[in-house]
Structure formats: C-alpha cells, structure tokens
Image (cartoon, rainbow, N blue to C red; front, side, top):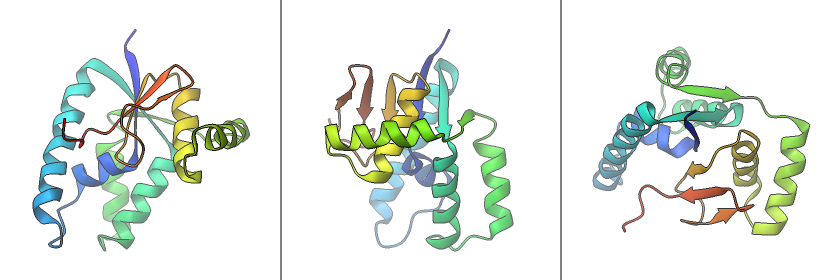
Length: 149
C-alpha cells in the first residue's frame, strides 16, 4: 500500500499556469519544483486532494489568471482527475478543522486542508502556506517544497 500525500492548491497553480510578469523568475522556479514534485510522487505515493482544492484552483485560474471557465474545467479534468483522488468535505471535516485551527493557530482555510489531509490518512501535506516541517497530531507533516533548504 502506497503512502498518501495531500497537495495544496498552490502546487497545482504553479504547475498549471504560466508565470505572471511581476514575479516571473520566482514563479518559474516554483513551477519547476511543482512539476518535479508531481512527477516524483505520482509513481511513489497516492495523491489526495479535496473538493476545496478543486474550488480554490478553479477560482484562481479564472479570476487571477483570467482563463476561460471551460478551459479551466478541461485542464482540471485532464490534469488532476488522472493523478489524484478527490475527497469530499464533510461536517466532521469542519469540526476537525475548528479543533486544528485553535490548537495550531492555523488560518480557517488552511485548517480545512489540514483536516482533510488527516481524515484521508495522509502522512505529508505539501503547501507553501503553512509552517515548514510542522507536525500535526503526530501524524501529518507539512512540507513547503519551495523552502530553500
């Protein structure tokens, strides 16, 4: 049985979009890291995401990157559905997120991501939005793949 990893929205944003002029060099670096990470874990791990990740990705792609809605749907279907298992959000996810938020001082949206990862049995959560190497509930390690180590 493969180890399960959870990917936050930003990994897919960098992998699926062209860098903005404002931060082009840094975004290109993050794009390369995201693509390399996806290629590596695709064969070694089970990739898990939640409906929240789909919603955030879709919203950012049409709003921030001004992409056509149908193009975004097609991109998500072709690129995410083929590599990741999508988990639903449940009432218990909300409740768990509230506990996580209080205990670890994590933002509302990030606590939902963490709760989803825990519920899915993931051992690693890749995200640039949370503290690198933070261990949640002695079972989930947050890794920022863009952290300069």
